[in-house]
Length: 116
Image (cartoon, rainbow, N blue to C red):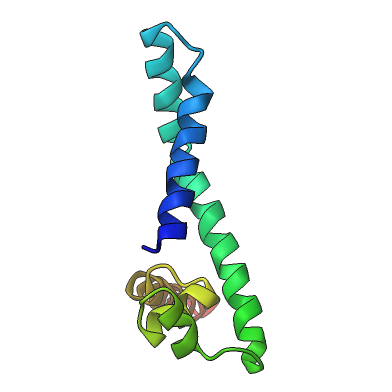
């Protein structure tokens, strides 16, 4: 991570700590921190989408930076950069899900209306 990234992460942590600085009761602080962690996946998804959108700006539908150059910005492979820009979070799982949907559609259409 660059010094700027480190600073931004530290600032984010300080902001989160600040949200709880005036909650003196440890029970209440514990509950509030737990609630924050429960919502963390949504926060993580929102940040991931923001990064995807900026990656899309950089790529500019092939008119801007290429995936290799985008990947070099954050030390990832060209393939990973492409996944980030396209919003592919788990290529293997997404491919399996697509194959499962296609298989279910084929099986569903072969079972429709032809039976006795």
